[in-house]
Image 1 (tube, rainbow, N blue to C red):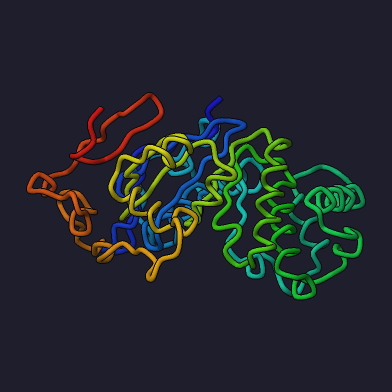
Image 2: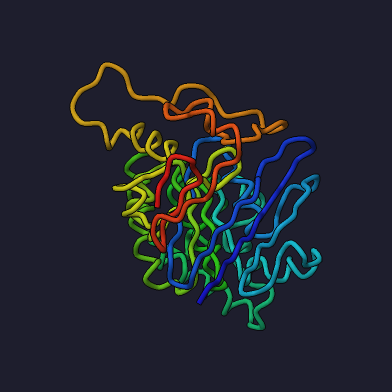
Length: 314
């Protein structure tokens, strides 16, 4: 069953066109990755998936969660869905919680729509903290966020997001603020939780290793557009868009042997106040030609694989 269906989503902040016609889907039981370098629109898309675009944003298109379009709904209706049917793990768990309330008080508050006694809600919170591997959940419930380590805070954030068993879980850079050891633990935890969570999971990241470990399908974003989509295996082993190939080439895990310099993608992202009329990646692409001055077609390579490029052949 399709849980998430995003169609031609466009978001602008004043003259900046942050998202330019993004479309994607996610089914129940599926983990979908969204990758790209900083500034490509990943976090803007993540916020739109939970119905939380910036106040000044202009939004068009559709973001359907279980058939309900978050773009068209009034804020009161979106608020009823948020936290219950769709939840998010933010980049920085320290700022995602209230610093003057204990973790237990907040996890109980997060269940305000649940018709149950406070003691039962606290017990559910403790059970979820135990499920995500937080040691001594009863003690953790009495602590403030500054008393928890970075890894413990991230586990608490995951527990908070899963507390109401949402149909869609969005994780925005869930391992960015962690050291390598803790990052591996959180990836392992998410891999375990996907067996329990029967909804869809969308992971926003710039880390291709996270995608390879967790995701079934991947959407590659550049300059506010989805430039390639496919299964994780297709994206890693048969990338078709030049930008996807450049991203993979820059991943240290794909560098064989010792090198003097780490590979980079030359140039910079285009100015999204006046995006190029043709391919947004053309100025940085080694395969660019005169035809790249016009908008590229979305070429379907296989039933699950497509790329937005003049050079791709079916």
